[in-house]
Length: 78
Image 1 (tube, rainbow, N blue to C red):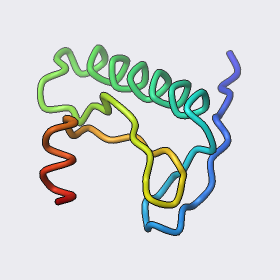
Image 2: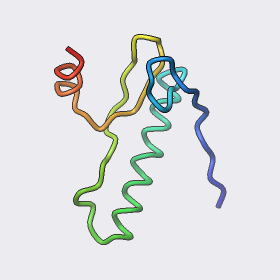
Image 3: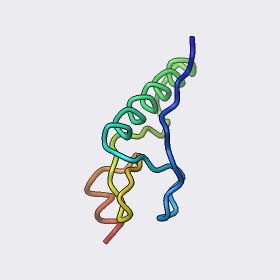
Image 4: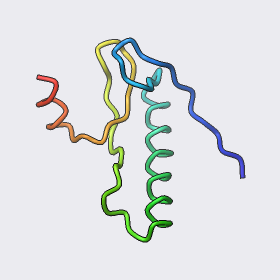
């Protein structure tokens, strides 16, 4: 079983990983969610796991993963 990674870059906004377009961000989101599901299955419960649930575009044009809801993100950003 080979693990393929999604190409990312560091972004000027300070986030750890930035993805060039929506397709790459969506692919990374799916991989991150699958990783969390497997970790939860190993643990026996998914309770308490940080789980990315969407991606957003930053002011620098890169896409980032976040576990915040859209309302919480825009409330925090305002």
